[in-house]
Amino acid sequence: MLRRIGRSQLSHFRLQSTISFVNFNNKEVSVNLDGKTVTFKNTFLRDACTSPKSVDASTSQKLFTTAEAATDLSITQKPSVVDNKLNIQWNNKGELLNSTYSASFLKKYSTPAGPREDFFFDKDRKLWDNKELIANLDSLHHDYEAYLNDEKTFFDAVFNMNKYGLCFIDNIPRPILEKMDESNVAQWPVAKLAERFGYIRKTFYGSLFDVKNLKTEAKNLAYTNTFLPLHMDLLYYESPPGVQMLHAIDNSTLGGENIFCDSFLAAEHVRQVDPTAYTALTKIPITFHYDNNNEYYYYKRPLIIEDMAITGDFPKIHAINYSPPFQGPFEIGITKKDPAYEMFDDFIRGFRLFEKFINDPANHYEVKMKEGTCVLFENRRVLHSRNEFSDSNGGDRWLMGTYVDGDSLRSKLRLGYRKFK
Image 1: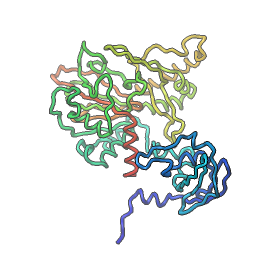
Image 2 (image 1 turned 180 degrees about the vertical axis):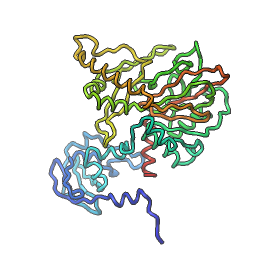
Image 3 (image 1 turned 45 degrees about the vertical axis):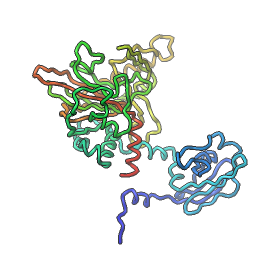
Image 4 (image 1 turned 135 degrees about the vertical axis):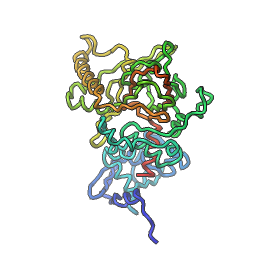
């Protein structure tokens, strides 16, 4: 009887590496890995040991510190390779310890880019403008019940979040309740969507928040009917939430279309057009603050935060920080005695390029979300906006939102890749 072999298993068989021992000394161990000699520090190998003496089997937590592992460390005998695994016996502060390292582990850590591949999946991320997103829009929509109950559908949604920074959940039933408070959070559809990731990120807006036209009582532009410019949320927090969700419960007013824009594409545009200005955007910090409603938050961060470990063709950008409504006065580069005084001109030039790009409709995805649809988007990548709206037609507009930490998204992404890729 033939047993079907899954895609991930086939990939494993094709990519399995082979190793052989080369040499060792008191500082390092060298192996031949797929025909190439790779040398590892002894302290790295000892620190990475997962033997029962090193890692608790129940909690998967280390039982030693890196400094302890590097103290009085030596190899007692010539390492060996058995069943394509490297075996080393250590003497660590007088205690003998046996460690085993698989070929796949050594391959993974043989290059600086190797470890990242299992954590962030850069090769599957893609920049987008209007044309790119419209061409792939159908794949970004997922059914509510399937998202909640089917593992593959949920992973597809998470995969798209990583790829484009957003996705949409459709066919959400209208909530039974009419008023939200902290006692009934779990009963709302947007909370169920968020808790599929793990945990709701509660802020001073609450676990969930209503987006309605509060007119003169509004504590935020989002709670009015006026035009809301492209921005990101809560950048005055030390750790802004990574994901935002907005569920359209009522959306029958005139106008009020939601607008989304890939800020990473805009930053990459600046880098290509004016590298000096781009560099300034990574250096000059922007002040973000919120001083209202008995709350006072403050934080500084540059427009562009880079991550030079990102692999492949995707821009080496970790996050963008853009939220004009919550900007405070600049604190660096503003006086002649400031070392960054000249760089501030480069910053302004880059900032103008960035804004011109994000305000071009060719780089927008604009949509009047259907009632019963929820958009999920990365708050550190995707800018969001809303057109002015009017209830002169007797319509109503009620969106309900919440936040989730980006760590929760990436945790589910990694688990999904293990199972489906």
